[in-house]
Length: 288
Image (cartoon, rainbow, N blue to C red):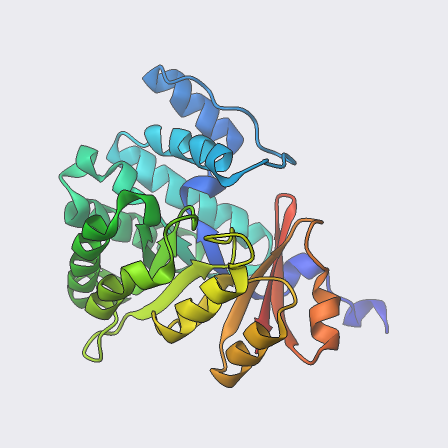
């Protein structure tokens, strides 16, 4: 291969389909906003491994506490779009955890409108296409999930980013322990009904809802929540992989050294779709 034929990975066009808005905040921005609002600065998570999911959630919520003004939302979208563009991203699907700060902006729908406006500004500025995934936070309960589903559906019908529907789908985030996919069936039925443009995009198999239940969580997300794409998945369960292949789904696979490398899955016949390096994590997507 000649030099002219070679291309750096960062120059290859990519899509980032699994991007948590607040979690992608620059460390420098986080520190600056914490100082501005007199909020304790959380630990630096670069390269850090967490012993359990709750420890991670604590740090994540601390980042959400820094979002106090409309300018913070606009800045966050702009910086995230700039950062992913450096990795070659041309399309990103952002999942904001705005349930933790929407009360500062007039409620869920008004906050969602502000998020869509900020996304459009960032897209026009950077050229990176942006869509929003409204995500249910498991630990906030079923009632809150169904409330958010109605708002997400309303947003999908009325909010735009550069002329496109702003809201792409309904996600499911947070600790799986005691919060199985089946509990949120009604919320997904509301948002992703046959008349809706939204699709089901839950996390599943990240942390098993009970010991050994990771694969079942992912399967339930497919069969009960009608998932079109699975975020995370569980390692190496033949029944799970067979189920995903049958439904022709994408798996959003993150590898951080604890899980089998992507090539092990690829050897089993699952096609590597694309990958985008961000911080210490490589996000890998497989066409099942």
